[in-house]
Length: 146
Ligand SMILES: [Fe+2]
Image 1 (cartoon, helix red, strand yellow):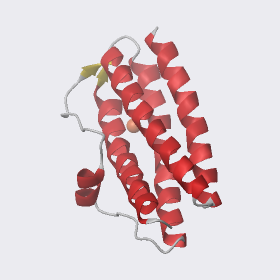
Image 2 (image 1 turned 180 degrees about the vertical axis):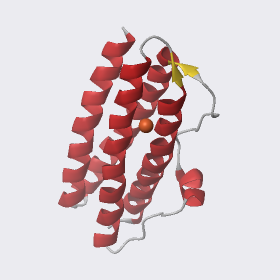
Image 3 (image 1 turned 135 degrees about the vertical axis):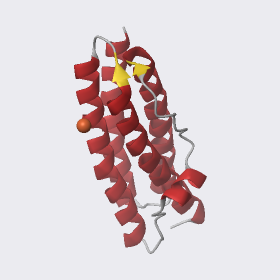
């Protein structure tokens, strides 16, 4: 695997790790009339990211690369920014989650393209699965924000 692909996979892994915790923060701190539905929806999103985290790390291992596996590395590599642990209205939360998932979608698209050029088909397949999940989540979030 090319060095650039391995680095991008680790940057993606770091965003999954940081967003997994960030979505818990938002799940705990959401307030407003739509509390219950947003609280539950955020849980489904972080559960999905937990699967991606393991999948991406194991793909790196299968290809002889070293997956980042500490919070220190995740914070260094991630482009998703954490939020303070305070209550937030559901509208603000949905906008933040939409922005973060759009960022991760763009990252997965770039990895998919790079892996395809390098013929690393198992990473292409994994990114296509993740992209399908992002497309669905982006649709949900935009509909909830209307
Ligand atoms: Fe919970």
